[in-house]
Image: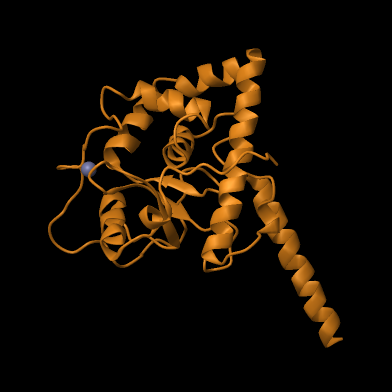
Length: 230
Ligand SMILES: [Zn+2]
């Protein structure tokens, strides 16, 4: 773990999600949001850009992906970078450039430190199942640019080098200093309020090691119960 202070783009008051924020998030994603405990980053107009999810969902499931990019203009722009193959060149560079690789490890550690702080603030506490597991492919690979951009926006510039690069590369469609909200999502009528999906949607698949840890935990629980009953 790093000794560096935790960096977050928003102050404590700015992170608190209002009812209006939650309404906006569900409009941005076109589905109801659940388990959002904070806002990770905001547009200059105040609208959410990033939803922050606690490291354990209310269902009990460990959740490593803390920052979820919600603004449709940014998610679409980042998808264009992914479609253009940017992740492939980033992965090649991580293999060749030791300085970049080292910075990326620090970004991973910063992500984990932020998640611990969010877990403490939201009352989730420690989530041992996902200790050392961050998101987006960190610390060695790039598997989801949306995750890296979400981290960069929530932590502020200078924490995640590849997230920062991706933000610089979407400048044609979105920049931090301007509001791109108008017309980006449906603002009339009811916000989506009923969750019909059976699965929690994430911007990447949950890391297999998390699933394995979860299965092991359940097995241990079951065995403990059986032992109690015996
Ligand atoms: Zn805006």
